[in-house]
Image 1 (cartoon, rainbow, N blue to C red):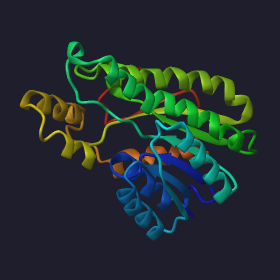
Image 2 (tube, one colour):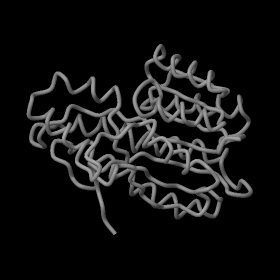
Image 3 (spheres, rainbow, N blue to C red):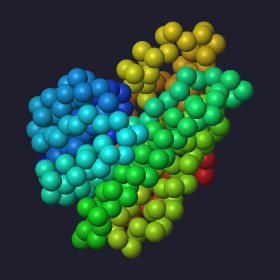
Image 4 (cartoon, rainbow, N blue to C red):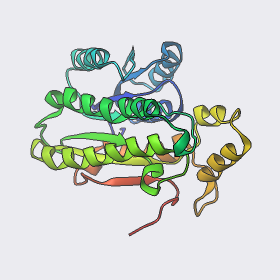
Length: 259
């Protein structure tokens, strides 16, 4: 038996990277999946892999900055599976890392719309399908970032948007506990294919700064999205996390250690 047998998980940003690896891991644990991304061709590859792992999968081409597409995605999920047990807000469009003085308000707007605004919409849209479930209830997992917690250089729009996600999540966790919905944030650290392929063209100084961020931990190695991060998502999605809400969890190999 899998840890997520019988659960329906809606997860965004599954064409590549962390979202893809999480979807695969969730499928292996018995979840039925509703996955989305902008790149339909790559999303279909993820769908096929998850189906090979035994999952029933609904895949839709969705830009999470398009509210109408979010509505259609949630409605299709509810119609297909009859329920939503877990919402994983993973997708985020990140702008090119650069010093704060070089960033624009357009950069900030893009990152806010692709994270906190989209997460806001999806939580509200999924609420009617998640509320007042018996037993362990339902789970919302919103992805935040150590870049916001620590204030990493070159990441002003990203840090600002991810800290907004954390603040929003704490409020919703407090308000929705009465409906047996738990809400937590997850700060991951894992080198995905989309990250490794996306930094090759950057200036040497910027590339070295980013690469250092991924090995700056007590283990001195890069985290693996499937092996190191996705199991934490599985835990937060499972009934084992029934007494955890309003928390920020770092799956980062100890990049950030605090009390």
